[in-house]
Image (cartoon, rainbow, N blue to C red):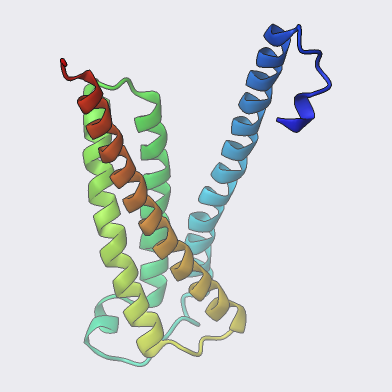
Length: 176
């Protein structure tokens, strides 16, 4: 790294220690901002669903009679908050513990639920609720759907990469 060049070359130990400290700080700062953003969005969904309950009315059809936009926001915010805390439980637990296995199973189920729920929400919003007052809720809803689909794609890529890593690791451990 260019900014580490001020450390003399003979002191590789300090350069490595500084690099580790810099990496650690970067991970902590990134994790903090990710946690704030990842919790801010679901909590704001719950708040908007509760506060603007009477303003989130859409034209009626079969699906929107059962699931209104305010219910969709509250459920999506609640499930996303649970998803966040489940990721924390999974990352803290050891690899072979029952908590890890349960967390992974629940993460897969919640990921599938989020996919179906995002499709239902998209159908409700883009099919029947294109004009909601205030206008900022329309923009926020589009933002929610974009973030939901990006998050789902990201989860699929992470899952695919972890499977590929396990295959490579298994291949490298085979006796030759």
